[in-house]
Image (cartoon, rainbow, N blue to C red; front, top):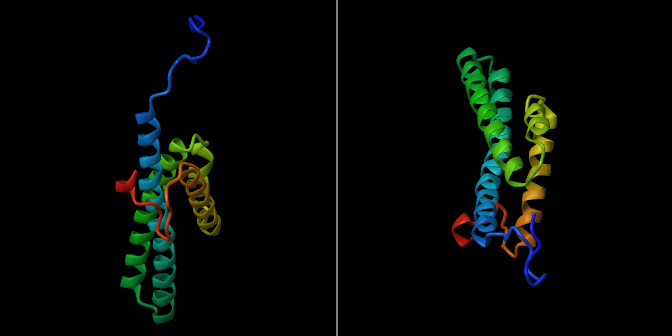
Length: 133
């Protein structure tokens, strides 16, 4: 690798648009993570209702929603961990453990919030607005 001619500029130069795209990806996937948290609470409530009422059809609907949510959680976690430069495999495996997955989603949400706040982006209750980045 060659040294810079004047010694002040570091090579390779960082493209500021790349960082902006990464921040936008973090903001979008943070919203998805928060939707997963809400979805887990919804599936848990539906599961409790189906168990208390002993409705088989509602139990099958709950299983289908839980599997769909699991797929969405894994995809969202992989996207967010790649945007935050974290190990996607470990977090994706932890999505299969029921209570641990909720804790992992909240930890990832905290890491995404921290990254966005470091960049000076306002983060609200349901994450940052990707259009403001």
